[in-house]
Length: 81
Image (cartoon, rainbow, N blue to C red; front, side):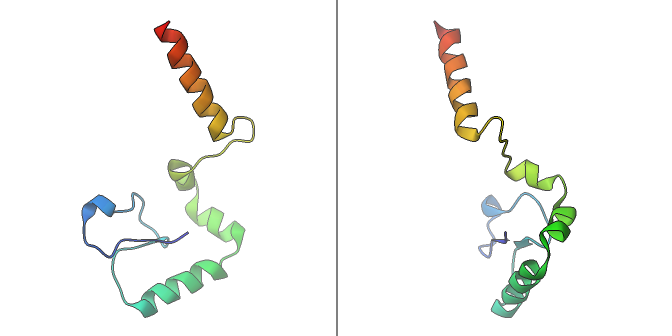
């Protein structure tokens, strides 16, 4: 994944710095970054990202997102009754 914010507006800042985020630069720098990321093995990328990925996106086979949201809604509705 590569997040880009060339607007200069902090509202659109990506929350985690690293090779997956660009704030400015030329097309050539963008192209080089994409190529560098694509050249990484999955293991190298996971090692580089570490636990930071869970901060942005988390998935569980045991409790997929749609089920977690459904359970939370059901719990909130039950508490209001």
